Image (cartoon, rainbow, N blue to C red):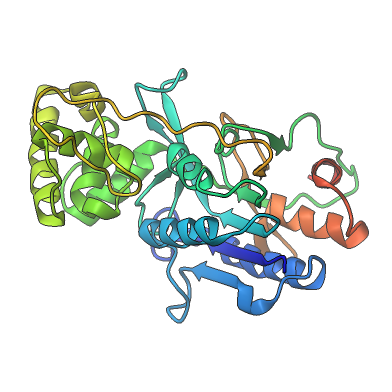
Length: 332
């Protein structure tokens, strides 16, 4: 029997300088869409939000864990869906052509970069139908494969009352400010990867942790990772060198890294393969260099993309991906 599973992630970042108002609302908008229009059962929808402690919190570790399990357990023919609503950012990277990794921002700022998402999506078995919908900034290219983006001119109603906007872009400088407050020391953009390794250890992206394990030549426990990460971050900072440039070298197995069996020169971690087009699709409101918005109209805040998808599907429940995005674009 074909299964339909979903995870819906909403980050309002309560009490932080990055606070938004509409992302948790997006989660419940999307839940209604899935249940009323797409035939999902409530028991098969996992909700992660940061405004209610009775729900699983949308930390970086929890998001990766839940997405990994959903992808790994899905069977050919199943439909799996992830919706992320929150901030997006770009992390300095020597490995990307534009010098930046796109990333989503969990509520604890334990960033999940595009390579992480590709890594997890690639665990899907052939024949699994995976859809990722990202209502955040810099979200184009998250899976590095077929995607449907809102692009081109949007139709505007000259008589419409303009809504209030709050950007869903979180500059890397703001990410660093939040991490600095959490860690009690100054974090610069060039040191953000080392800071994530130091703060979150094995729960951090393997693309931040891997370089540390390579230098040691062996697997490390959480305490060891934090200790060495802090030392390397301090050294790099004093030298004015980015951790990525100084190491340039990362390695490891999925979700937590894995060092080489011996010492020697560090090895650069291989970027994950692009996600096959027949596995799934990315729906995003903007390209990797563009921004998205938290919109308030009629007293309620929500994501511009999510709200317009709801409107579009209410008009045409059977719209395909391309029809859906074009309808949503016309509403923006």
